[in-house]
Each structure stands twice: as C-alpha cells, then as structure tokens.
Amino acid sequence: MSDQTLEYRLADIAPPRRNYRRWLTHTGLILGGTILGIILIMAVLAPFIAPFNPYEQNLLVRIVPPVWMDGGSWEHPLGTDHLGRDYLSRLLYGAQVSLLIGVGTALISGVIGTTLGILAGYFGGKVDTVITFIITARLSMPVILVALAVVALAGSSLMIVMTVLGLLLWDRFALVIRAATQQIRNADFVTASQVQGCSVFQTLRYEILPNLMNSLVVVATLEMAQAIVLEAALSFLGLGVPAPLPSWGLMIAEGKSFILFDPWLITIPGVLLFALVLGTNLLGDGLRDVTAPEARN
Amino acid sequence: MLQYTLRRLASAVILMLFVSFVAFALVFTAGDPAASIAGEGGTAADAERIRSVYGFDRPLVLQYASWLGRVLQGDLGQSIYFNQPVTSILIERFQATMLLGVLALCFALLLAIPLGIAAGRWPNSIVDRVALLFAVVGQAMPTFWFALLLIILFSVTFPILPTSGGETWRHMILPTIVLGYFAAPAIMRLTRSGMIAALETDFIRTARAMGIPSSKILSSYALRNALLPVVSLAAAQFGFMLAGSVVVESVFAIHGAGRLVWESILRSDLPTIQALVLCFSMFYVVLTLVADIINAWLDPRIRDA
Image 1: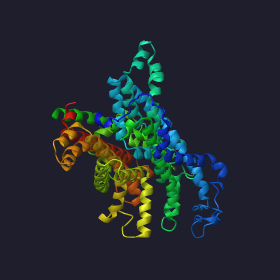
Image 2: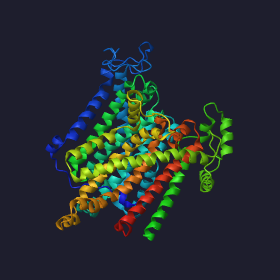
Image 3: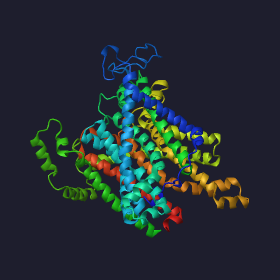
Image 4: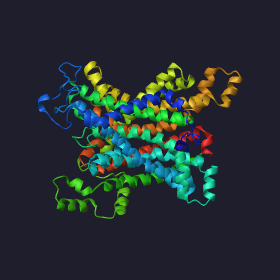
C-alpha cells in the first residue's frame, strides 16, 4: 500500500473553539449520544431493573413470545429463549457485555495505536518507515480470520476476546495519530519545548499528546463500534464470549435454530446491536464534525 | 512508471515475507499446537508424538524456513481433517469465494458510485440525504444479522429466492447483496467527497468559464479525478469482503473458503488455518499492489513522487 492510501484527511490541529451551539444543533451527535446514553443506562441499571436472573432457566416457559404477539404476557415483556430465560433480562445484561468489549478494546488498541502513531509522526525517517510497514502488515491480515483463529486456540472468554480485538484494531489509531503528529511536529510550541531542553517523552506527553485528544476521542468512538460488531460476529460464530453469558451476538446465534417460527428471537437482539453500533458511529462522526469539521468527507 | 512498479513490487515482496511469518507463527502464539491437534482426549504421550511427527520440537525459524520452502513450491501442507493436500482443497473452495467476492464488488460499485456521484453533485439535497442514510445504516448493520433478516424475509414472507447453499446463480443473490452492502458505504462516501472536492477545483471553474457543457465537465473532468482514490479503496474493500465471506458463507451455507475458515477452526485443522490466513493476506497484498500500480498509471503525480 502506498503512502497515498495511508493519508487521512485531517483537521488543522488548532485548539478547538468551544462552540457549544454547534454541539446542540448537530442532529447526528444528539441522536447518537441519546442512543448510546440509553444503552449505557440499560447496562448500568441491569442488576436493578432486570425482572429475572438472566442465567436462570425455566423449561416450563420456553420460547414465550413477546407481549405484543399472540401468547405473550407482561410476565416476560420480551418473551423467553429456548431455555426459558427471560429475554429482557438477558438483553439488559447483554448491553454490559457489548459496552465492556467496546471500551476495553478501544483502550487497548488506543494505547498501542497512539504510541506507534506518535513515534512514527514525531521522528519520521526510519522509525516512520518501520512503523508504516507494521501498520501495512497488520492491515493485510484479515481481522475476523485472525481473531477467530486466536480465540479458538487460546480459549474463549470476555477477557481474551477483548485482548485479541485490542491487539488487532489499532491500525486506525496509528494512521490518524501519525498524520496528526506530522502536522504539528514543527509547530512553534513543539520547537520551544525542544529548545528548553525537555526530554522527548516530555515533549510528546505534554506538548503533542494534548493536541491529539480530539482525533483520539473520535477514533476511539469509531473503534468501539467496530469492536462491538466484531464481538457479536465472533460470538455468533460460536467463538466469542462463552455460552451462558448474555452477548447479543450469542443470543442471535442461539435464536438461529428457531428462525422459521420465532424470528423475533433474532430480530430483537439484532435491533439493539444495530442501534448501539448506529449510535456509536453517529456519535463518532458527530464529534468529528464538531471538534474538527475540516476532517469531514 | 517501470521504476515505480519495481519499487512497489519489492516492498510487496518484503511485506509478503513478513505476513507469511506472522501467519505461520499465529498458531504458536496462542497455545500449544500439539495439544490442540491431540484434542481433549489426547495424553501427554500423544502430544509428544505429534510434536515429533509435525516437527514442532524444532526451532521456530527452522520450521518456518522449511514451511516457506514448501509453500513456494505450491505445497501448503496436509489437512489434518480431510487428510488431503491443503492446496487442492483451497483451489476448490476459493472458487465460490472469489465468485461471491467479484459479484459483491460489482454490486457495491454499481450501487455506491452512481449514488456517490449524485450526492456529490447536489450536496445537501434529498439525494444526498438518502445516500447518507443508506451509508449510515449500512455501516451499522452487522452482516450476519442483515443476512438473517434477508433469510427471514425470503424464506417466510416471500419465498422466491433460495436462502441456503451455493449451487445456482439464484443462490448467490442474497449473499451478494449482504456482502456488497457491507462494502458500499465507504465507496459511496469517498466518491461523494471526491466529487465535491473535484467540482471545487480551479480547472473545473476554468472549464465552466470556457462554456464547456456541465454534463461533459461532470463526466470527463470531475469524475475522473473523483474516482482515482476509489480504485485503492475498492481494492481494499474487496480484500475485506473476502474476509467478510467467513461470516456470510457460514450463514448462507456456501461451500467456500470463508466457511472453510470457520470449519477448520472448529476442527483445529492447523495446517489449513495457516494456509487460509496466508492466502487471504496474500490476496490483500496483491490487491493493494495492483490498485497502486493502476493508480500510478492513471495519475502521473503518484508515480513521480
């Protein structure tokens, strides 16, 4: 891959003007923030508002349809799954799994990607060549395939899925941070820090990093969405988080056998997954528009 | 041009070597390969025997060198599950995957480029809003869920298309839509922004001032510039789609390489997994290489840089 494809269109790294009206009038930002907020509340309050224990099986009430369908009742507003577990409770706890994976992955990949990107952008030359090569190599390995293989070999658990995805999804962080660092490495305040005798670490940590925060938040949000989808896909294929855990992807996989007669088993967790990813993406795009509108494309 | 091609080729070869090492080492990083081949019922003695049969007791670099030597001769090893050469299995399985990938790419391009052009030509119009909605939804839709929704729709509501298997062309329609829609939003957005940027350039203003009809400006001047970056993106998306076939082929029960990935992983068929990771990565490297060369050929600014 040439440098051309690696080049991300980036904002000027001038300090953002805090124009809060722009925040409040951006539809995508508000919508995305609201969706993400609701799902966050679901996840946090799950232990208090879930009507049942999400792991408790009751074979007497297997596959009860949701309340708006024939045979549904308010006892189980969203029905029960093939083992008689309350669907609403599992969905609420499932929000915890998705958000945990999203945040955990973004943290791990953020640390790796930012470190690589900042070093490549600041030093340039050979360091840049080597790091760009590593990024290109990483991009040519298909994420889902490598993640499947590693999770299968290392055993599946929430922690392992998070770590594996974190170790794989740092490429966008590295590319964006590299480009952003290149733009400011010759700025006066960086030179000032250098001639004052600050160490490289101090310059990077106190002069460069704070100026990358806008880009970092945007990429972290978008990476979170990607991690959530990938976890769901891995769990759907049976190689993500292990079975009794209520992951939305896993719930869709379990509902697959009942696709003909009870498609709601698939559509309900799918709608939530779709909403979460949509909300996170909208928030990320919105944050980019608001903090760095020049980067929009 | 020749110089650029050679330079680009050299870097691709280095990249391939590195990626092949990672593909090879992958199975060693995550655990003891002998233990996974021996399976749950395997004893320590079994694992020991497997270790010496497969040569896992030798240094990693030596194992890699002999593996690479065989790979270069077209021998990807012996599948543990099928007890056949991996190469012949892959050749058979990649046919369906390639067909699906090409169909999906065509579908994505046919959908995304006209939409992107229209959206870039009239920013903030109704067309632009629809295109944006289409992109935002597409980027948030998990492929496996979209696939299942289509299965529900076509097997229950109106059963006019087969929802499982890959024997006839009609079997390929739904998988093509799923995989194509997954790749389309990025292409659409890039076409749109390329179009907007191209229409703002000085040479377009000059062309307008000269009285060249706007249809001609749009189709021959703006479009060419807008589509240049799309070539690289389409190549990258094609690579991602091949990887995405892992999910799509599993849902639609298509007998392709993507489904083989999943099956081999469940069967701990390590030589096949290694070969698949290698092949999918190599495709990506080759695709980006070809895209870069096409780009350089189309745009002299790149090859002279």
